[in-house]
Image (cartoon, rainbow, N blue to C red; front, side):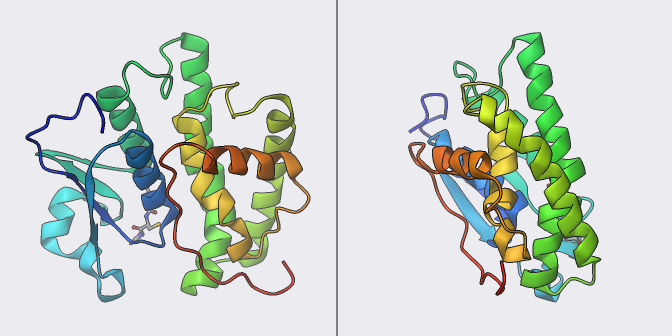
Length: 215
Ligand SMILES: N[C@@H](CCC(=O)N[C@@H](CS)C(=O)NCC(=O)O)C(=O)O
């Protein structure tokens, strides 16, 4: 149990799709912080994420969003910042040191700027049948992994030897990259990093999807 979470508060509501890595990174952070949460699975196939009531919570009609006892937030990385500051202030999840904070922000930007159109997009094609350029997404994923691999040869986590929200933001779509036809075989340091995250107390996995042949 998180010492900063009021004992009389309701569990944090997480509006999600259980197969979304954006949602999983939020769930993982809440689990790591020992926060009580209740998942609200949206029927996205039938447009529940574009319904007027949901758009009041998340105006672009995307998941995830959270409702923490009246504090409503959307955008996965913004939610990670909130959770770390609100419930992990005395921990290293979001360092105050200017250089480390900047390094964390860099990887949050990479999660939105490189991971989303790379491994996440490749997985969207295979898992959800999205009409995206799969070849381009796979190429972007490998370009990203070639940058990450030497970083993770040099340190246990993306910004040093302590886990931060940068690692949580990166984990879900990279761990599930093979579901998009992106092999992690050439990247031993990335695979070791994923295992280190999976070894953290309270780790929760995202439900697996089939891995296409030839990965
Ligand atoms: N920047 C957003 C992206 C979230 C996102 O793309 N969510 C997808 C599911 S993984 C979604 O809701 N897509 C529905 C849509 O775009 O209409 C975040 O980090 O939360």
